[in-house]
Image (cartoon, rainbow, N blue to C red):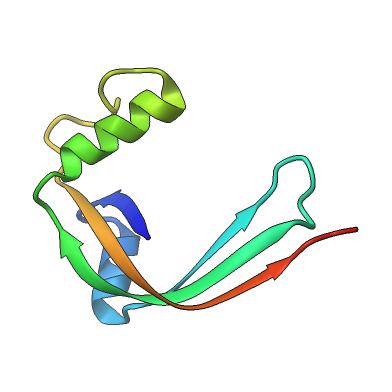
Length: 90
């Protein structure tokens, strides 16, 4: 799993201190349908992080470039999955 964030944010500070993370994904129309992933950040990647966030901005925001500060240093957190749990409502 790849998470794109910026240097200097609490998230990057926290994963440097303790690489264990959890990611929860909920279905918007039925929040009882969800998946939780547990893992650890195994790599912080700076190369290509700006292009990655621009690609995400195009997909999810419909813009060519991410509207954040141009001097912001982006970083990709590469997560190695160690566990998955899911709940599906009837």
